[in-house]
Length: 543
Image 1: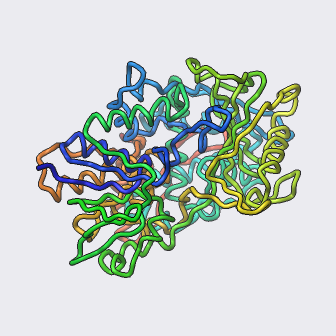
Image 2: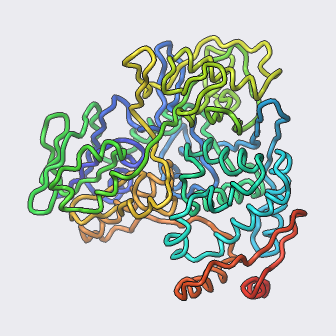
Image 3: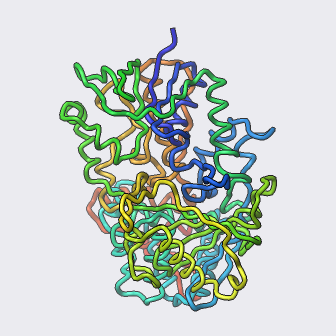
């Protein structure tokens, strides 16, 4: 008889865990409270039948776990991974300023090639008005982080904010606006003075490496609404593997008996299984932490200290198409940290009754807008629409002349119990300094409870679809170990880093044990020249 697994939550983490376990012969049932699976990744029709997203989806090239799973999902005569198409440009839009396009270039693979990466970053940032000396400083800080051992990254850099690490207070206003604050707010809804230097720096490195890699692979998007191209085919595949999916089934409790999960209460009914995978958002999981559960696994107490914020989408349906750029537009100094993508150019095979679809993410809901003077969370839906349009207009100006918005739709997770007070049913977990210590592993002290959510410790270390998928793989591996299964374990891959700096990380491990400060092995000049520095730099130059 097959080992049974109850997966609690049908988002990317839950579906990924079900996928890996079903392919290895486990009997899996997924319980999801919403009427549609996919969690924050899902898309759904508006009341008028137009495609809407919780927020637009993008798949950076550094994602490895999620594309591996997508390659095993039949979709449209191919696979879900095959339905990813390259976004070839990024538009950095500035209010009342010249906007800049960024295209992928060349990938650094050696110490000498790090100069290519430095030149790419220097050219891009100086086009935005950031002084070259500030860009050089940022690159030195990134190279220092890359040359640090894992122990220093966790024991020192995770405890320091990104703002402090790059000494933003001592840099130019442009540096603070675009590189220290703007990118973190728009990309991951985090704040530079709160996000850990370890996570902020390593993710920025991944994005820079992706952008500097040859070809249109830095950023990818789906060729249709998310559920059409990926989530619905995924569910069909899982069902073909014997997975049962129960929708409209909220998880309401976890019963602990003799140090194990005896049952889960789902929709008022007791559910029993050999193993349980909690793939629930942190704000939901916190509500399930009974005193018995906390005593059985004290590491779950750290969930109380994790931070969530809002990052939700608004869709604008246009009379005529507005391509803007074949990729994402980042409105670097917008009050509400907006990013957008024009979808029609990618949804080529999708029949739409409108000329264009502009999908916009709002990442800052607690900063006053330029028109209403109100934070987004205190605006009415109409005020949110008007404020977003005003901020787009400030950045795009004449490009919006004559553009007509036929209809619009605000993410269904934003709920309005009062005319001006909104709540968010699906906030986003954000990284904060020191939060690594509060994040549990996928396996727990409760032998039959595993975790597959974006708050789990992963290589990705960020609340993303990639992080959720990696957490699910770790949860599946823990079940395979506990069940003494002979099935192959799920693949896990660390973030890619320049091989040239591997010797530096080895040497820094010794320095860390000796309580010595982190060296800066590479200096970057304002002209973009990269030269080894100090004893460690001279050692690196030999490789």
